[in-house]
Length: 104
Length: 171
Image 1 (cartoon, chains in turn green, purple):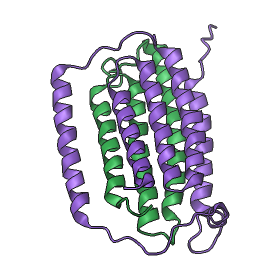
Image 2 (spheres, helix red, strand yellow):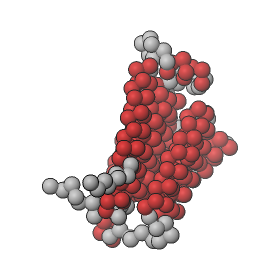
Image 3 (cartoon, chains in turn brown, purple):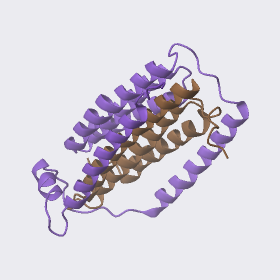
């Protein structure tokens, strides 16, 4: 177990964070942008669990932060999908380039 | 190089390859399915790190909840068989550059930091999580627990109110 150094796990989470960032930059559809945000949040969760396991094995704080991040991500996804469905109903599109009604 | 570390590298390659496919594939439904595989790989990574509770929570909430929600919203708003329009060549190039630079910068910092790991073996008992979550002493998490319950209630009511169809009443 401990022959894998912590930096290899951090490599996975950093790469996943920047993959999500790439999707966030290139996609123009709101649902795929939401998927990229989910990838970013998951990479943060991997970080918390790995730090808790490797650096502070006597505490449980990273586990609690992970649980709270997962529940906030669930609430955020529910609200975001409600907004997307409402926007589709009024604009017939979920493309971020066409949603300019709130611009000054 | 024993079987445990080989398992880790297989899981890591699975997570990263399905993650890349999830953000680059052309059809939106396929993108959701690749995201599902990536989240399952992350749950496998939690099993590998022997935090079984978080792995179970990951499978229940992400795979069973959020992905199903995303697939339903794709069915409600998109023509899921069609190709999405490709991003501009210039935008792809510059975001690839920004992402590669950011990754190299961040990983260089992580690589040079030199973590010193703790000595005690890590052992996760679910009873400990429950006791600490609801304890009112110094290291208890009762207050964030209550706040998050209020937040979940507010998100529930808010998403119902936002997505509700407003009846057009003519008088």
